[in-house]
Length: 460
Ligand SMILES: *Cc1c(COP(=O)(O)O)cnc(C)c1O
Image (cartoon, rainbow, N blue to C red; front, side):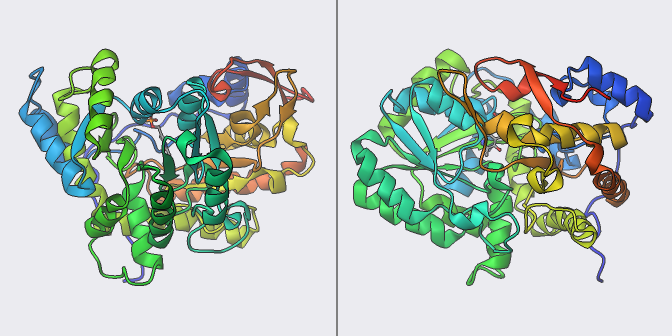
């Protein structure tokens, strides 16, 4: 059949509240024009993130009941560890309450003040955790990844030449490890090829630098490799995932993505000393190493979810939903990152709203317009999230101004996506009326979550 259907039936439903436009404008105003302050129930289609927002399967709900809540050495921990090791092949496994907890302990135990950590593109929490301990987080994404309109199979690849140049310039002794993020969330959810992971490994081997994979979307990346890279068609996704991890020394994971879980994360590594140091801080910050800040039932849910994420039919459907919206946008000529990513469609707010300069945050203009038009909650990945500010308060804009429409896993159906496309089309039609924003209040770190905005022309 030509039609790709959702490979599941719906057993439980959650109502969606419908507000009118006037009500949404009021809600946005009282949220200081920052969608992070909106109540979820006031969002009709919530595409803020694909993190922890997925629907669990019947097998996961059943597994939840099996949760063994013993403090140490529970049966749930054993099942969790077995699943994580089956996929990653790593010697040491540590649960954490989220991905960022794994990053934070990794940074605290390995990164010193004069250290540099390269990545294809650091995710915001990864960058913040490295910077918090005084390290420098550098992005070395290949040029293809910055070319929004370019149709290329692996735009999340690391720029190998620049990686080697960075190592030579910095000195290998000041690089505690190098990371690769699969898929590249901040750069449009673009995949990283196996060849690139392999090449990164061989460069790092030359300088004896450990390699850490940010594995949040390892299963979606494995699917992309299966579809797009020579030699992988027909291979089980778990084998592809295993090969990816086989090149790494360690990995951080947010199970809220490809763990198909609502909470959780982990850190895995092969090195005994890394593990020992990680474990000591884990006990201080998260909990005993056999639960690491999670309930036994969470460990069960993740053990099942990690395997479900590697189900081929699930990934076919998952990618079909993203492509469905991408194709509609292509037909309408609406600028977005091509090809569409694994978990999201990224609108190009620079091209969408060329009349708004970067430091008037076109991404915020677009995000807020989507909410007003249809109650759709998206998120800015641009100068608010990634812009830099020097000691004198001067701002540098981000390289890209994107708005991410992240798709929760197994949550929305095709009619939701049809509605979404209509909302985007309406905003596109009236784009000339969208104004920029200024920040009226901001914290020092991760400002996008809590800063306040004001529209520059306050017709709203
Ligand atoms: C979500 C995410 C993280 C952080 O994980 P949390 O569970 O949200 O703490 C790190 N890296 C990437 C690429 C992510 O998408």
